[in-house]
Amino acid sequence: MDNDYSLAQALANAAAFSVIDKARLELIARSASRQLDTAGDFIELGVFRGGSAILLASIIKHHRATRTLHLLDSWQGLPELEGEDLGTFVTEGQFSQSSEGAVRARLDGFQLLDVCKTYQGWVEHTLPELSGPFSLVHLDLDLYRPTHFALSQLLLKMKDEGEIIIDDYGNDELRRFPGVEKAVSEILAGSDWSIVESAGERDQSVRIIRQS
Image 1 (cartoon, rainbow, N blue to C red):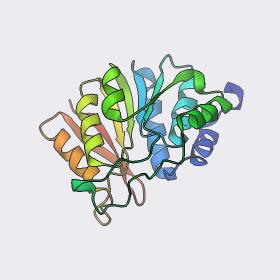
Image 2 (cartoon, rainbow, N blue to C red; image 1 turned 180 degrees about the horizontal axis):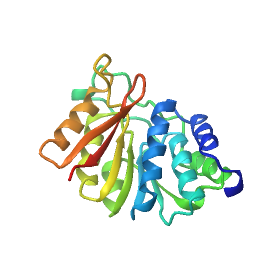
Image 3 (tube, rainbow, N blue to C red; image 1 turned 180 degrees about the vertical axis):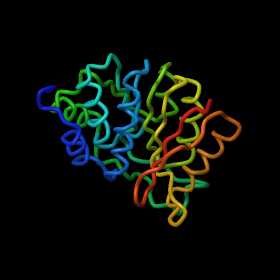
C-alpha cells in the first residue's frame, strides 16, 4: 500500500463513500497529519459507509503510525428526533443504509482494517468503554443529545495537543443542524477549548483545540 499511497488518492477513495464534501475531508486530513507526532489514538463517531474512516486509516497506515482508529456507529440510522433537532435537515432512521460488516469489508478491501476497531451501538453505550487518550476526534452525530454526550466525555479523554473536528455545525445562513451548534456551544462554554477553523460550503465543519 505504501508504494501506491498519495493523499489525493486517499481523498478520492474517501469521497467515493462519504457524504462529506472535499473541503471537509481536507480539514480532516490536515488535522490527522498534524497529529501523527502526538501520542494518542484517533476516533470517529458517526461512520456511516466509512468514507472519512478510509481517509484517516490511510494516513495512519501510510505513515506507519502506532495508533488505532476507533470507529463508533449505531449502524441503525438516526434515533428519534426531539427538542432542538425537530425540523432539521435529517430524519429518524436516516443513514441506516450501511452496516458494520459492510464498513469492515470496505476497509479490508483497501488493506486498512488492521489499524481500525469498530464498535456497533449508540454512542452512550460504546464511548464510555474507551479510555483514550485521543489525539484526533471526528464527530459526525448530527443531533443535539449524542453530540452533547460525546463531547462531554471526549474533552476528558483528549491529549492536550489534540484536535476535534465536528461535522454539520452549520453556518449563519442555513443553520441546518441547530442541535449540534447548541451542544458545541454548551460544552465549550467555560472550558479551555474553542473553535479555530471551519470548512465546507454548506454543512460547515469546525476544528476545536485546547487554548493554552
